Length: 394
Ligand SMILES: Cc1ncc(COP(=O)(O)O)c(C=O)c1O
Image (tube, rainbow, N blue to C red; front, side, top):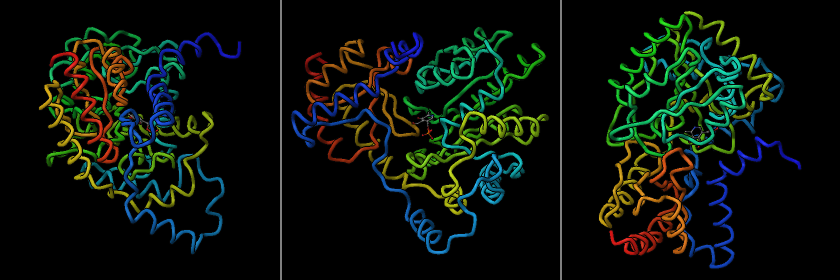
């Protein structure tokens, strides 16, 4: 047997997105590419903003000597400074490059953060529905995942959260805009989370960190201003990625930003830098660090995503689906008609429409649609949604 018992179990439990992806390949071979409507992957079809290619061309034409060498593990000073300047402008908080560690996307940032702060058996709480990898990242770094419920509009249930905090709680991991629900946490919610975590940390005599996973921070709709976590809680770490805002998921570039108001900030940043190295990431990709230095504050066209959200949310609602209207990210998370998410996702698959069951995100009874795809895929999926719903007499 090649796999450990644990990994075998993880592969079996956690492979929903991959399973749908594989089903898509089979269906495409069987029926043809244009007859299959794959809404299962969060892999944006939009191209990076034009400035990305301009910067890449400029660097290729006039390369700086040594630009592909090893560097300090936290990243280039100039890139960290550019990121700090961007966050200063966004938050009004005096970030410096000493608060920033560049890393290989949000996935690496989260693993590095957890590695840095967890002792074996420490608990990490996150709200369902959640990005499924959180469970594995927590386990990777010796932690124990604890799932908390959300309430109305997929907002955190603070009463339930308080009941789940124990002396072993080391971090609360939040994700807003949320994958898969599209919910954005309000400043009031963040304020209440901060107050609760501060009180519990004091009671326990040890910090409970707030880790905010923000790959979708710039993909928000209806003119909303993004509510920042930093003003609400000192021991906070933001993990960001340019996978979605610059449409660079394959390039593996992002950063961790530590709240300047956190008193042990320098020690924490040293720990993050060390763990970035020993987890084998070593440093964020050099070329991408050179490129994104010039692109802080630039994003893909969010209006495009908002148009797709309005289209899909509008059509599904007309068909009788019950679906929260997302405030950000590029997913819809409707209730599964009939209540059984697995059965409904299978039913949709009969019409060549691929989605992911909510149990893959810790929330049975829902399913996820990823609408960061071409319009023809969204339009083509509607017949399947109509037929599947009719089968259940919506
Ligand atoms: C909520 C969330 N966190 C983290 C990640 C990982 O992002 P990255 O590709 O930057 O590692 C994703 C990717 O889809 C995500 O949706």
